[in-house]
Length: 487
Image (cartoon, one colour):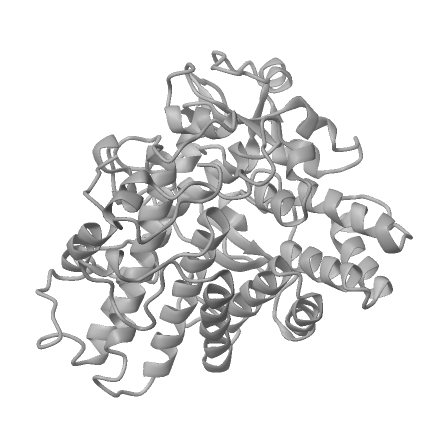
């Protein structure tokens, strides 16, 4: 993947390119190339809208977060062709990663790019007034909160600069903020979004009040602020427009942007991409990477066999759980049933992440890099389980927690449970793993609840809760930023 010197050099380049990338989701229109500076931009509603498009565009590169979030956990193994295939994936799987890891660098770079693009809009948010300006600013603030929360999950506290762009030199003068300061910015951004957006987006894929409420509840849950998390999440459940959808179609094309979608990253197969610039793809690169190696057969296209579920992940489902074979594909059983053929990749387990397997379609360019599968970033099932956890772990209302948990279980074809206290906590944790397997949440759930060392091979407590800041960023800060502990 294309590399640049450091994050601030990257940001200057991104500012020149931000609105010339052209996005092809339903809500993103092609834009002309602009010379962008404070003198000739942000003079009209169209300028602000196009600037917002530039922030949304970075979401597509966050496919790396999803892949590595699973590989780092006990749900999957790295896979691929060999031990040398995408070394960064292999290192994270084995918990041997260091501050020199291109794939972790990608997570830092592109989420920081999202923050920088958002800050560029917010720096000039008051330059021109027009009807609906608050809505655009609210969406930009949601996106900044989304990218910032991802960075905080992966790397711990980051440098923040309020509503201003980072410029060269800031890396040596602006320190990493405290965790509390970063969470405060995230929460303030989301509260502004909640106050200025409705539950219904003006165009498919744009942020909503509900998305902001869900992410705010999640931020509170990560801080173990259970009362605050329960309050915002139960309000969302009671007043929002969301519902559990049919799991049979949830991860098919017809299941995209449905009643369960609280926030969904939009992808398209209409624009080709290449390995020289994976982040330039308008398709979901992670999907092709997870495909079955040399596959021929019905429904699916072949891929690179990364992120393969473990036997233990498949076996955690009971036979009556309808999610079992809709979430994880048993390739041997599938080949016997359909006559499909394939070859085994590295660390082959016999299982694939069916939620995000490449589907047969007419995507452009390299089929492995332009898959149109949307990423379900926040689902209503996740909201129900987060609310259940907050109510239970906060000692607030086990009865209501059971109700939310049982909604998810009953959709999966399972019987309702009667439990309380720590037994209920364990059931909620178990259900989160089953419901969200393959979606990039497991590693962070284990870390935030203190269960990572007991479940992830090679995990070192006091070190692997966070990933290392990329070495080049530490070097360019000239001692201003300390590396995370253990690296």
